[in-house]
Image 1 (spheres, helix red, strand yellow):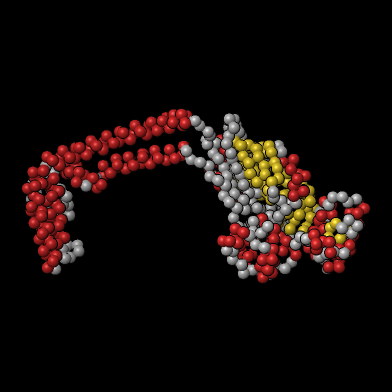
Image 2: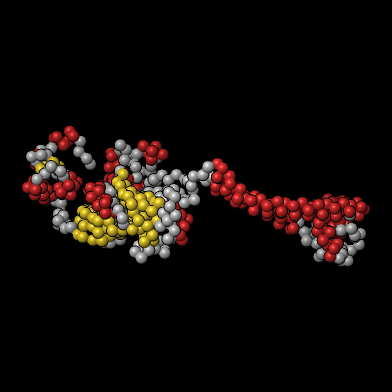
Length: 472
């Protein structure tokens, strides 16, 4: 926990690694560990003062029972640190450039997962180390593997042209070679919500509790990967398709007119077919009106008989009952009359048309039935569905033409932090998610969760702070 000015002023001189300048407090285990890591980065110290500071820190560590066996070990390693986000903004009038920007990693906080080459340990990149290595990102290639799960140095599809540190984020920008790698760039656009960056680095490291602290590094390359491979998994991605370019109202209207012309013509042709088919059906129905009027009273009599039997509880079998058969007979008579034929035979397994109806009569019956119940006629239904589908295409095309770029997703609370707080008996309220937690609340929750080691408490607090839960 940081010392206030009052607390710092009260410390005796021997509780500073540099007592004459009262720098690098070593009053407890946490500050003693931090002091060791800060000796080389503390400004205003001579070589002799740094040497004496290390001796004082070692002495204090022994008094506090701190294991210092790993403090002097610095390892050199090549690691692949996987980052989080990828942003593809507007193209700037160049056929072979698809610009991108995104976040490679965080500084001053542990990674969520161990990156490749770290020996299974999570990593910690100090801000001052990242600042010194920032320029080494410029001009480095971005590569792309077929399964988007690893680096492939044989497929360099882009280049990094800018890098900066904003807050705790290392941000980069550059462009992909859109004309040289059209399929790869199209895939990036299609799957942009699931993609992020990773980078390769030549680094010197030293143990820091359960973490691996990067002491110095040089960036050597980057790749586009799926986000679920990332060591840091808490940032979001915003992307803008290459086609989302600015247009004047006249240019947009011309584009829509050209794209919608064929669809409008097809819609008109289908509508004409539907109207013609309905007109033909109406003509046939009117032509057979006399026969339908002649048969209608008898069909009604059959239905009335069926109703009387049903009321008396007679002939009620669900499959072969008299009531059901009478309704079928009435429907059969009406269907045959619609074709212009006088009904004489009822066939319970094929009652839609008479046995003697020829093909022409059958077609007339189909048209008549279609006029009475258009939704049941396959021909009209197919054409109606086609009209609806074309209308949907028209709506979708208009919507796509004016679609806005979605805003980046807001950072959410990581599952690790949620589980840690729950283990300590704390379920975040909406107000706590908005306002954050005090250090006292966090300390109490970590204690309840059994997080007692200093290094573990520091890592847990850094992760909670990274999720925006530390009240300022």
